[in-house]
Image (cartoon, rainbow, N blue to C red; front, side, top):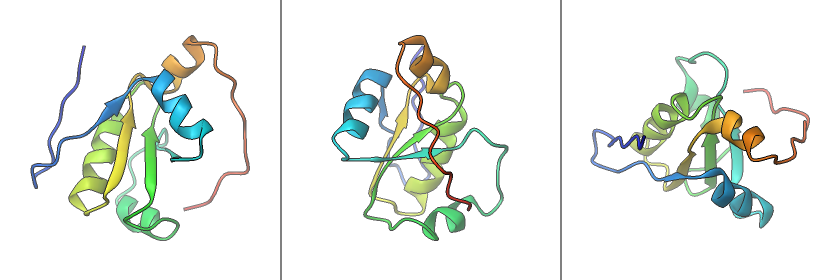
Length: 107
């Protein structure tokens, strides 16, 4: 099932599958933004504290739904290079991709 969502500004959320996401991350083109936690009322402000609106961000969650909404919020806040990782962490693991547990950045 494809989930297509547009921001109120009309920007369409770009969703990439986990294979493409892995490639984007491997070549250091994008940084991963994990949104598996519950919704944060100051989400955009928290992202702005650690990223600029021109940064390339790949947004992922557990299954790929919450990340669509988070990506939409970032697009509405005029972030320029954000995309959603379709299928989320479940699809990542399902494809047998390795999981690194880096030190998380506190937002």
